[in-house]
Amino acid sequence: MAHGLDRDAVLVLDADSDEFVTVPGLPAHLSRNTVSLSSDGTRLVFLSRQDDGAGPMRVVLHALASGARQEFVSDGFVRAALSPDGSRIAVLADLSNGPGIPGVGDEIAGIVLIETVTGARQPLWSAEGYWQEDAISWSPDGRLLAATYLTLDDVITTVVLDLSGKVIGVHEDRVALPGAHSVWTSDRELIVYPEPDDESPLIAIDALTGSERRFTRRNFSGYLAITGGRVVRPGSSPERVVTTDLNDTDERPFLTFRPAVSIEAIDIVPSAVR
Image (cartoon, rainbow, N blue to C red; front, side, top):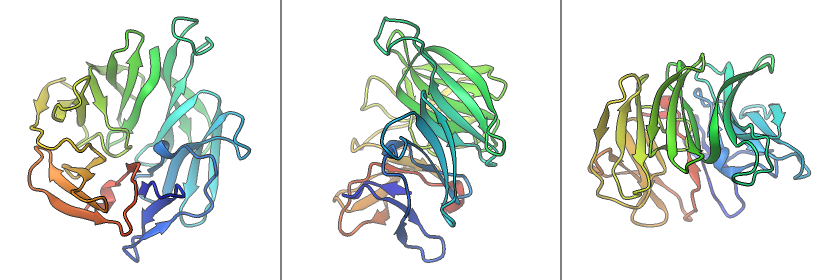
């Protein structure tokens, strides 16, 4: 999935034709940087304002084949990710009581689970802080969640939780990529990058032990996604997207767009990796 054409189109790679097609019938006010795919590649997940551009945010599940939608509305929703089995949505939510001014009132970042069949909502976790830098991702087995937020002390932090809300690990100055399928390399290992040094290499973290494995960075053109143990990044010309290994070597062509497009985000589901 990629988006970023002049008309802000959302594109998906059709499994039958092996060509990119534009997804029709999406809301006019969708939040572009929140768009991701379900793990089976059949639905889009994104946040959107109401059709008139006002009102509270809604989490939308959009079926690619039929265009059918499910919507879940709340003022505080920020970003969402669908569980691998499609039964639950993990939603980053602003649970603050204050006016949104730093230092005034409570500033609370939280995660809410929503059952996709019933719409039932379960508060899972919260902490003092903001979703200024935000990411949320399920482990491939659906047992853990990784989320990135900003603490009240302005420390970018990635937290790992189980589905009871228990904190498994807290990793300060570590940022997860925003793509729903770009964080976890296995059921217990996640990939992050350090802050505030944007030129630092990627880091693999064992979610259960907290041990880290640091890679080598040789290219500073930015990260678009991670899939199948490889980094997706812009190529040497505007129309090219390439992949490298996690040490920034073994560059290979990945996608070519003609005419060139400005890509804001890419989400690649595990089943699409060949």
